[in-house]
Each structure stands twice: as structure tokens, then as C-alpha cells.
Image 1 (cartoon, rainbow, N blue to C red):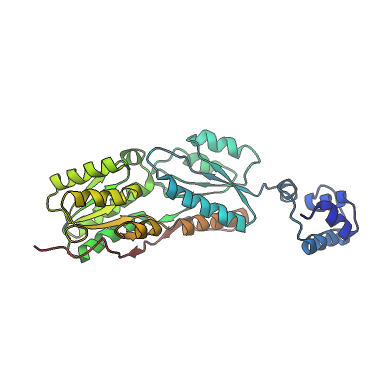
Image 2: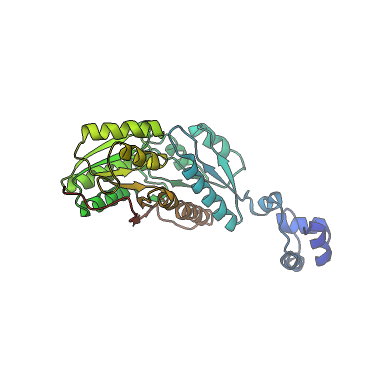
Amino acid sequence: MVKITDVARHAGVSPSTVSYALSGKRPISEETRLRVQEAIRVLGYRPHAGARSLASSRSNVLALVVPLRAGIHVPVVMQFAVSVVTSARGHDHDVLLLTQEEGEDGLRRVADTALVDALIVMDVQLHDPRLPLLRALDRPSVLIGFPAEPDGLTCIDLDFRAAGEVCVEHLVRLGHRVVALVGSPPEVYVRETGFAQRVAQGFTAAAARNGLSSSVYPCEATPAAARLVAEQLLRERPALTGVVVHNEPLLEPLIDAFESLGLRVPDDLSVTAICPDDLAARTRLPVTSVDVPSAEVGAGAVDLLVKKLGGATVPEATLLPPRLTERASTGRRSLA
């Protein structure tokens, strides 16, 4: 590994001069500074984080705030986190992952130190108590998710309302008239988490617009809960022929539960989902789905944040359009 002494030897200066060239703490001649820069380029030297922060008055660290609350599906959240970390490294930044449920206090503690230059915030609620602080901070931030009032914030996400609508429109084209949404766990709706609320809004609006009979069923993310909600649906909605699932762990258990109750998928019941494509494609019966584009959203959040750090103006709202992929779990409504 190239050391600062190697750079000094190549440039014909002392190690302290290289340090001054990196930190800017003391003036050096332009000729010397250029020799040091050339030595760094030729040798491929990478100054450690402390030197970089001295030179730029930045830490080159982004905070990713993702409280691991009850009801969230951690594997999908980690897909977003990996995307953020990978993209940040491409911009020569590291990522500090904050997973505790600390609200404003946690954000303020990090913002009051020199630990991070900027923040990416996930699990955004419609009336998120962190928003006033985020608007007031002297550090830029980007939200993965949309609150009810996003003015003055920078937000990016899948258009979850449109995703709910796209799933219903697909079922409409197949002739289905009675549909249900099996949604996130109840506590996610109680918190008014933005993405869950918007899926339900889009689903309900599209069903009403097309004259469908519809209902929304929050559900815990367990096989036992899947069985119970399947039984409840068939009891309360005996004419049901189409289901939208927005609860990743329930995909296979729910299909199993319906089939054990005598319904064949897709002959008797069509199932669509809003979930990552890889999950929908690898279930026992591949599921028609709207992808949750974690890689695109995570990279987009980092790109917006880096631009803000550079002083550029960025759009306040970035909504990614939903993309539905048809698979084996949906078919035309049986008229028998």
C-alpha cells in the first residue's frame, strides 16, 4: 500500500509538506503543490479519511437513517442499504448506517458532530416528526419516501400509488371484478408509513374508477396470518377472483393458503404483488409483480445528495414509474 512517505520521496519533499498539501493547513508554493499532486496520481495514493476531511472540511461520510421498526421487511430494506453504500463508494464516500428508532434526537446528535456531511432518511411517515429538523439542518438530506407535505425537502421513491393502480388495472384487463389488497402489517398503517398508505390509496382509487368491489386487509407477515387472512377473504368476499399482495414474506404462504382452501392460482384466483422482481420470479409459482427498484432508488438518492453537496439545484420530487411484469400467477377471470 502506498504511504505518504512514498509520495514525499517521489515528489522530492518532506512528508509534512505532503500533509500540508492535502490539508491546506499551511501555505506551500504552487510548484510544490503540483509536484505532490502528480506524485499522488502516479503512485495511486489514497489519503486516509482524516486527511481528506481536513482538505475539504468534509468527512466524506453519508448517514443512512433506517430505523428497524416493527413490521418492516428487513431483507428488502437491506437491498436499499446495499445500493446506497455501493453508489456512495462510487462517489468516494462511506456510509454510516443508523438503525435505532431515535427520531429527532438521533438525527440531531449526528448532525451536531462532524461525523457526516449529509443524510439519507428512510421509512418516511406521512406526518414524520423528523421533518422540521431535516428542513432546519445545515446539512443536506434526501428522503427515500414521501411525506404528506414534501415542500422544502428532496424526496425519491417508487410511485407506490401508481403501483397500486397498475396492479388493479392489470386485473381489470383480465376481467376481474372483485379484488382485495393484502397489505403491510397493521403497525405499518398505524404509523402512517408513506409507501403503505399510498399503495392502499392507489389500489382503492383504481378499483373505484373501474367499478370494482374492493377491500384492504392489513396482515402480519407470518404463514399463520396468511392462512387466517385467506380464510377471512373467502368468508367475507366469496366472489373474490383477484388479490394484490404488498407484504413480501406473505407471497408464497398466501398462495399455499388459498390453494389449501380449494382455489387454484391462477385458474380460480389471480395474484399480483408489489415486491422486488427477484422475489416474485423465484416463488414456487412465479408471481406477476410491480418491481420495487431498490438499486435505482438507492443510487438516485446518493446522486441527488452528492449534487446537493456540490451546490447544485436538484428536483424536490423524483417518482419512479411502476413497471409490471406478467408471470404465471395471473390469468383471465373464469366465467364458470
